[in-house]
Image (cartoon, rainbow, N blue to C red):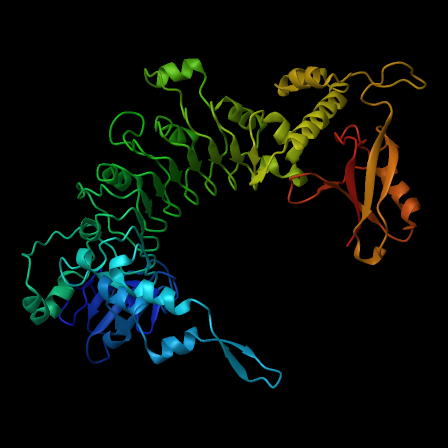
Length: 560
């Protein structure tokens, strides 16, 4: 059976609805009509959360095509809601005085006899009174309230004239503008024709709302499934921040938005399955002359070439690319820049924050490329193979040492002390490897610079050597802390240990120091700024090989 456009019962195919009594259970109407073996009219809904009963077919008859095997349902019309107006939602959210609302908002504590003792929030009435004065309201959150149409035409502006921030997350919105044009009705004709106008406006015209809120600067439309649009949108000149997370928009639609969002400063596009950046003209994304922050987290971008198409956004300061599919980072050299386009503007000239967590980056060449970004001081590489030291990646101190200009790494500040300690440990680590393979120096662009900066000698010590100490000679001051559950409370010990001591030897010493002969030990290096300690699992590696420096802290735990 083909999908039906029947709307005689107030529903139409493509309309966004929610379950009666649960405004968070949202779906799209896919069918309106009869069902074999049952009386009356049914509405076929494809639920956003995938929690339905079938794929659009029942008893061998297909009524519609759901997105998954169990995301579709056939529902009676009274069990669905077409939503409420924006103005109704404002009234319900900020002026409702129902008994249920008051009961839900009541604050109390339990007495010793388990009875409720009401408490009063000082200033609550004043806050509520201020929020209920719509002419003074500047911020409104109407998330998951079933908003599907504006309300009385041309009354939004007069009701909330000073609205600056509007959160419409998880409503029933889908259209940027209505194609059907209607003349401005007076209030009497509006109410007399309410059912027909509700149907006409059941796909909310986002452009109309923005047009009626001249002070609006921030708009959140996340979790509204926006219909594709192929033509220019009305100007949205006042919008500075637009959030379109999980709305289904692609880059072609972003390009059309660009022409309307002339003052946009922040654009959030999380979770839209964007895999390609498709500029409308030229090789690069143009326009967005005020855009400072672009959030493309949780998309499907796999090729760095797609990211480079954003490199000529001259005001771009923050670019979020967490949870994509990137496996390499490449900043173009001078020759590549000339091949791209003749421009005096360096790629990502003003970018100071680039977040790349939870991708597939696994090589140090990509890490070193971050040094070429002219003004980059913050980055994130957590949950990439290169940052997983337990699976062939490198520890935090190596990444910090290789990233010369980074001041915030993986969300935490790189203090001057951490940078110095990391760079010294890194030099020690490289020197220990050079004795086995002199060619390895080619893989460490900052090694010579850092070795010279800290005046570190690179010879291995000789027994009984005198004179200036090399990195392997002398002793390191190491603090050992017991953290195992069955070890009891033991005071930390600070010991002078030879830099050539191996992890295996250190475990043996810990057994003796703390009297732990009956336990099988694990050692961890606690690094400043790192959320998790680093497991020291190679018994033959020395403290010098691991880049462990003076005044380091090693945690002593037990095998589970």
